[in-house]
Image (cartoon, rainbow, N blue to C red):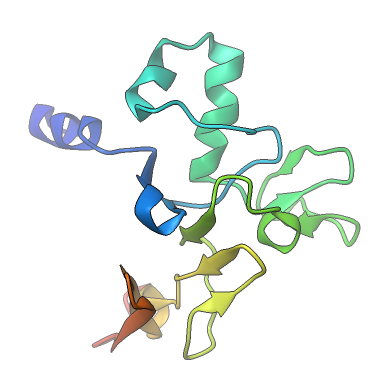
Amino acid sequence: LSIEDIAFLETGRLYYRMPQYQALAVHAGVPPAIESLPANPREIAAYPRKRRDIYLQMLRIRFVSPEGKIRRLGDETEDDRYWATFYDGRLGTVYFGHQVFMPPAPVAFAHAVGLDLGAVHGGFLAAAILSDEGVSYILEPARQVYA
């Protein structure tokens, strides 16, 4: 990566809060070990490594073992559960990507909404629009298969 690429990546946020809608946007999801979030996501960089790594799981979580361990992609078992199926809403409704769902609409869980509709695989690019009137979605079909 170039210096410019690294500088761009460093401007990213681990999560984005929308308190007016009791909502949170993340890349992948919320690990069970996270009970609360610091007001400023940049504070996490100063946490001790073990604690910081728990928050960084927000970038890659999919399946969780019955013991609460995050499973790597391909290592999940039939006893493991997808994080959004048991997320309790403690941080608000979570809007997330990372896990491809191929239905032609965002996938709603009790307290989370999956927005990755497989654009890279020829599906749809999805966006959630949150407003005082509620939530609406914009779906744009992929122009081609990219992967």
